[in-house]
Length: 453
Image (cartoon, rainbow, N blue to C red; front, side, top):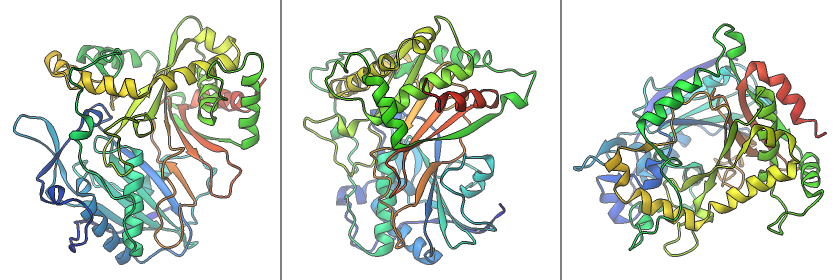
């Protein structure tokens, strides 16, 4: 597939007096990053959305984007610092990158592994000063793709999908819903007195020396004598409704879940993937392996102040179930699911509030701690990281031809990372998992995934 860029420009907000954002935000010079923003990955995340034909005219999409940026000024700003040196997004209307391109092929199918070739469907400005970059690619079949690259420090997936929905609404000329909420200060104030009820040093935060030590340990996982075997390959696994039902049936064999509730689809999928990835890697013994699972705090924080659906920043922490490799591989699947379920459930409002109190206490700055979400990590073994798009407003974007046919992560070659994406509209209700592993582990991983013995 050959992709030809037709145009690349910075799109700035179009203020027409009808923007729904509050007047204080409209007049603000900068937006401070919250404690959740600063704890997240300092990297651009690639996502691809595919739509049915016909593709709207480029001028219409560009005009809609300009209107959406008037509602979400963060995305056309730039990184900066306030007078005290705290990180902020400077609201200077510098613009978001907007690329229009054509491909000499039909659109790829949903059940396709992300490959380096798909990087051509994503925008590339030659730098990362732009917080948001978008590429619209038109295929010969008349359908089109929207490739998105956004800085995770600014927003999480929920907020980004809301922005995409706003872009679609602005393109179609309908009211913005949900209305964006930009207040990153009052929503996450520490309690008085603060109550740090959980351990956060060594979990969300580490010393610089600990991070450096982890990077050095990564090299022990690699096999430089065989470069081909060290290539990271992203494999798509389709968990059909029947496959998920079988997993849940296996988990219910024996004692029921201690919580009294059945395990969720995500818990079943994560437990199975974690085991198969560990087996495919050839790990064994008493070594500890962890699954870092992103948890959306919007559903967890229930007391006042609650986080509005239209909040534009990050509200994500990670559940971290851990097991020895031997226990993970030898004990019944239901025990792995229970460990996963317990840790996800435990990342609740108390945990989120405790994190706010710790991160706001001054300890992070005093001790020079850094976020454990290290964008420089390229090998996660023996751990895995799971980011789920299930339950997010993924199908909210509609530019006049309907919601996305499917969504997938861009090619992100980080060994051990997993993206879980909901099935297509009208599909069987399953999910797709995109798993990044070294090529030498892929065959064993696939064999394990579809074998439930």
